[in-house]
Each structure stands twice: as C-alpha cells, then as structure tokens.
Length: 166
Image 1 (cartoon, one colour):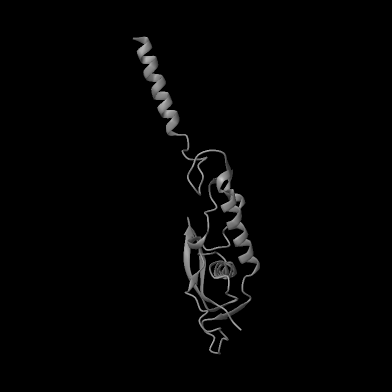
Image 2 (cartoon, helix red, strand yellow):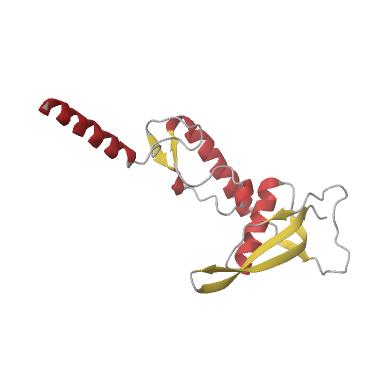
C-alpha cells in the first residue's frame, strides 16, 4: 500500500512539475521544429511595421532557418539604408513629380510614443514593401491617448503613399 501512494505522489509531482515548464521555449519561431535554436531577438525587425515584419523578433530560430533569418535581416537593413528622404504631407497643395503608375497603396506605421519614430518607421516600411519607392506623399499622422496605470500619454501613427518621383 505504501508503494502505491509513493507512485501516486511521484506521478502527481511529475504532472505538477511539467505543468509549469514553459512549453516550446526551444521551438523554432520560423518553422516550428524543436531542437538547437538561437535567440531571434538579436535581429531587430522593429524598423518595419509589425503587420509587414518578415519574422517576429520574439522567440528562437533553428540552424535550418538561419538563412531565412539572415536574408530577412539583410532586406530590412537595405530598406533602412534606402529610406526615402523626399516626403510631402497630405496638406501639400503643390504638384508632386510622381512617375506615372508608381503610386502604391497606403502604408501605416505602428503606434509609437514619438511622432518622429512613427514617421521613420513609415519610411522604412515603405521601402521594404516597395523597393522602387524613393518618396512618400500624403503623409498623415493619427494620434490617440494610451495609458499605463494612471499614466496617460499620446501615441502617434503615420501613414502615407509610397511612390517614385522624378
């Protein structure tokens, strides 16, 4: 009888212990396999709006997916290096020298605490999605109030139309 209760206690202990072990800690975020992984947070894809990020920067990746991760990181670095410097606000009434047919669909940044951070993310995301774009026109900023506990603050989101100018 004592053996029976020791087995029951041992099984309960194992089940209790396994319930609190984080599952999937070593799973590859890219392909889902379990094995030898590296931390994906090393690559910062936050320059790209979260809706368009090639890989989420939280989790791990396996050696088989290392090529995909490095390729995505190169594309983000190229987009960051080639971010458009020519921008026009939505209130601009003059003529923008857009190459016909180069206008793309409107792109949005994530909500940011700084207005300039939202603008920068919009520019990098525009080039990441449309490598031929060298300008963004009709830039608009949306703002809203967020809060953390009792602390309230304004967050910004930028949007604009990527295009190629002459």
